[in-house]
Length: 193
Ligand SMILES: Nc1ncnc2c1ncn2[C@@H]1O[C@H](COP(=O)(O)OP(=O)(O)OP(=O)(O)O)[C@@H](O)[C@H]1O
Ligand SMILES: [Mg+2]
Image 1 (cartoon, helix red, strand yellow):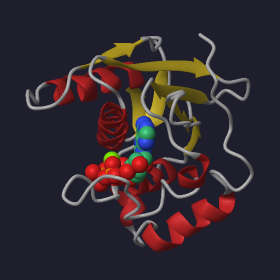
Image 2 (cartoon, rainbow, N blue to C red):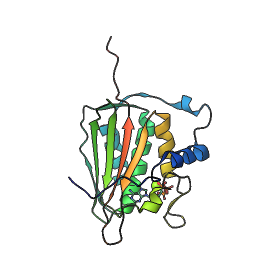
Image 3 (cartoon, helix red, strand yellow):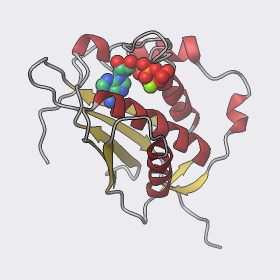
Image 4 (tube, rainbow, N blue to C red):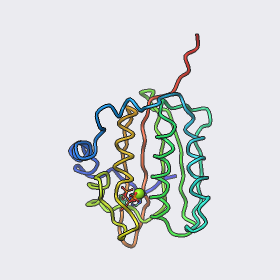
């Protein structure tokens, strides 16, 4: 599937912005010890998050497609990974029209790490907002609709799991192109004695 998505311009998801997110909302000392890192199945985790969101009858209908390879394991804290999917999926649902599509895929990168992609066909994110979406309390949602903490938490949790998050999106009023979040984690392996 080919889409008109592009990397944010320099100054988009940059290290400067990441540094700011980290310094304003970084891990509290010792919090990393709460990590319960283990090999876990990203596809199952994604299913669980989608099923949880689908339980809420009060929200607009969107379809979740999970094309992740069922064999792929990531090295992660399953509770954090679930929370990450819930945050990304609920943002994606907010950004989509009724019957919008949210697709999750995964692949092994050349360097052996796993990349999970969460893609929606929603309204997209304009360049000037891409610079800010991981900042704590940055929200474009109305009062009472969003705290702006979702992606800041996602960012922090990814760091705590030695992972990375990146985003590709564009937005033009008459040409929404959707948004794609990329999560990179180490591969999960069971030690075979
Ligand atoms: N998939 C997406 N499509 C379009 N915009 C998005 C998407 N994901 C995030 N955003 C933008 O990033 C902003 C910040 O997201 P974040 O999850 O941190 O906060 P929020 O969703 O506004 O509030 P909260 O998650 O606390 O309820 C959103 O308000 C929205 O403008
Ligand atoms: Mg959110």
